[in-house]
Image (cartoon, one colour):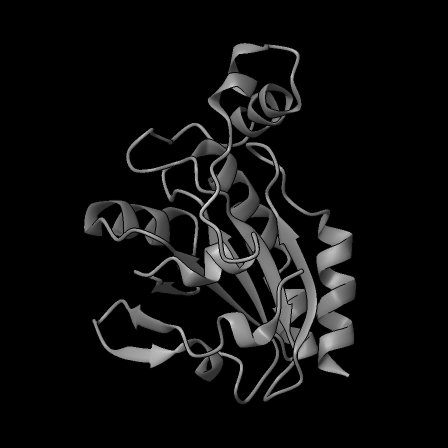
Length: 184
């Protein structure tokens, strides 16, 4: 199970190259953190759309929306933020936040699931391609992403979700319920 102490001191870089610790992101307000497996991924872009569609609800609750990536390719970040992510984005070079979801171990999603056209991963990909036509395969895509909902200050983790197969994103109703709990 993910523990706040596993990643709260992780150094992150913002788009301008400045460094801050992870805990500074939620120091003054609750936050939904999307751990983006790969910014060019059709599945990640589709879930980004879902989160952004609900950004107004998060804003009304006083909950900030941020993204964290594990690799920084400026062209990919520029494309992602221009088309899919009008929120802050940070770089976890150490991948410590990503590995905190898997008890500190760097795990990888199996490519074997992509061999079965009836798998949950393929179902998610077909659904994502209905709304996202601009995507690519650039970058490392097997280290799973996820989502965290954090209370402000030292309030802790309200919700965590680890991607267990490609495109395994949490239901938006669960994210909004956790955000509401974090804002109280």
